[in-house]
Amino acid sequence: MTADARPAAPVPTERTAPPLTERQEARRRRILHASAQLASRGGFEAVQMREVAEAAGVALGTLYRYFPSKIHLLVATMQDQLQHLHTTLRKRPPAGDDAAQRVAETLMRAFRALQREPHLADAMVRALTFADRSVSPEVDTVSRLTTAIILDAMGLEHPTPEQLSAVRVIEHTWHSALITWLSGRASIAQVKIDIETVCRLIDLTSKPGRG
Image 1 (cartoon, rainbow, N blue to C red):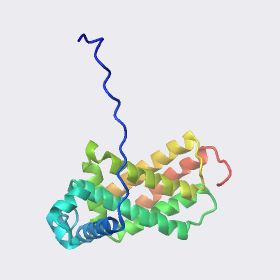
Image 2: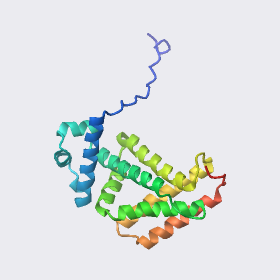
Image 3: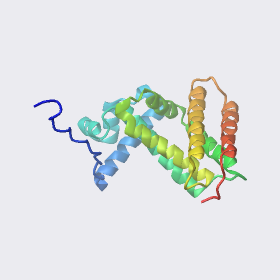
Image 4: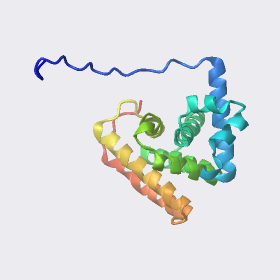
């Protein structure tokens, strides 16, 4: 068969994992709770897969079926923390006269939550930094959650491309500010100034009506 006559390779289709059963979801919640607890006490190095499995009451093989590596587990832990924050923010939305103020308040509330658990924050941020392509779906979920939190604070359901670009820059700045604070190279006051400064980008984009 010549090269021209070869059949075309099948186009891979995206496969969606089946939803977890109630029992599986409960097991996953125990694993994430154990991960957060260990990280809170000892940071990144304290999160060992065998110890997570023991603390969660699951077999080690079961843990690896849920999370193929420590990096997958810690990025999922950050996703879980962000989901909890998102729920809290929807119950108690940020105050502020304009979108920039509301976003700045939202991100500082997120920062203060991480500040209360510095070892956990460091473990999750290190996992994001170390994540390779195999963790892309989990990292993308963290990014989408962060974007959703910011857009909620802005009061937007249908952002323009310019607004989404501003949101991405705000996310990058927040992440960078968190890293510099964790490494001791920035004070909380400096983080607040940086967040408030970058949020002014929102004023440079178009401002459709809220909702």
